[in-house]
Image 1 (spheres, rainbow, N blue to C red):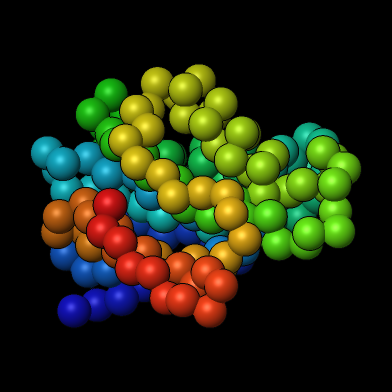
Image 2: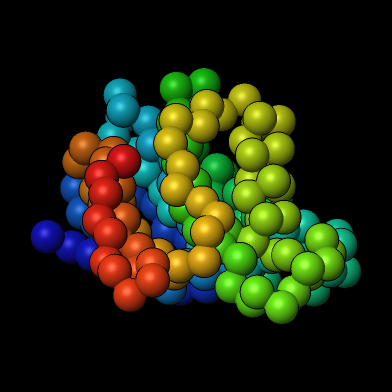
Length: 162
């Protein structure tokens, strides 16, 4: 089975078969979109919440808001319909316990912006595994829309299917 690996500040879309994966989601968020009817799916690995806040510098896929727009555009090109789309969010961990400023709590802000943008775009959020302290790896199966998530927390490996 073909696996497309998505790095930080990147995204990928596919149709009907294959796995889209991303590794090492710490404070970053991984957002999956899936249309069950057409079996079109996509995955974004965003580093920071809002492009405008950071001066719209560099790659738009590294921001939740502009990255989601890019993902949705390519998702629709393959036949995905936003009205039928299901979204899932992963990551957004609080990686640095000594950081308490809201402005520096990137994981929390990534989750908030992801939810706000999905709502604005009219896309239903059907599952999430966010926050906490552990890093996550996700494997998104385009044939079923299911996401297998591996999380390391306090030295334990937790695996769940969403």
